[in-house]
Length: 297
Ligand SMILES: [Zn+2]
Image (cartoon, rainbow, N blue to C red; front, top):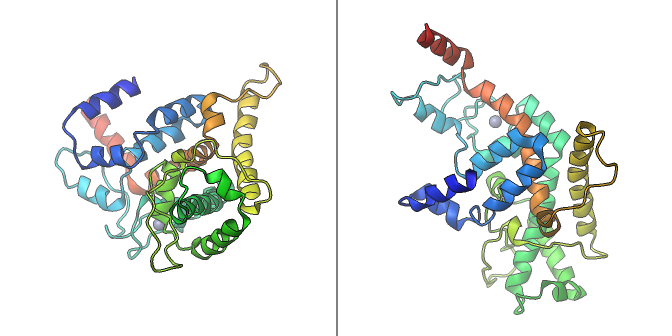
């Protein structure tokens, strides 16, 4: 049904949101997200929010303030934080955004979820790897053979040094876009003046990623991926105690897209818990239920 709805949407006249969806890598990975959602049923709510955010339907505080001015809109705001600020951390001078909500918001509950999932650490590791691949593909003439380049220690060394220096400079929204499966530019531009630009890359573009033996960043990234997906397997097992004890055989999509699966799953974990916190802060739910009760009587 969702595939049908998706197709129907794109047969209509395009607009800013649909154009962005088509060119930013989201449409390319739409089917994969549906497949992964089916493989992680315990994260159904989280995947719902992932899909909404991928379609550009994550409502920021500024947009929420605009929404309530519409006469057709029945929701009521639950915070008096300035519309340019963030109601979750109650700061008037810090703008709310998807990236801020995921990585930087000072809300106590969100900080806890962030710590528990390890989403910030994972995003940093992932960004470093995407940046390395982008920087590598632009500085090498052979763009098709990444694996050969990895074996060249000189280039790898140079890339590592350059990437390390820039790893902390990515802003929260760029990291969030990366986790969502959007194409981002994480190329290191801080080194030489005439660095050629490489195309924007999404995690989904890094198909069949494998760690390169001896690369410490890769070892760490692989460990994090295993940890993210292991939590999931453990949860599944508790639910299906009577089913086979053997580890489930990985599906094709999981074999081909280890980075994309891990980033989508960890984002779903964060959103599943985080959106409950956020919704309570943003929307006055008692007001809307009173309204619907009044409507019924
Ligand atoms: Zn905040």
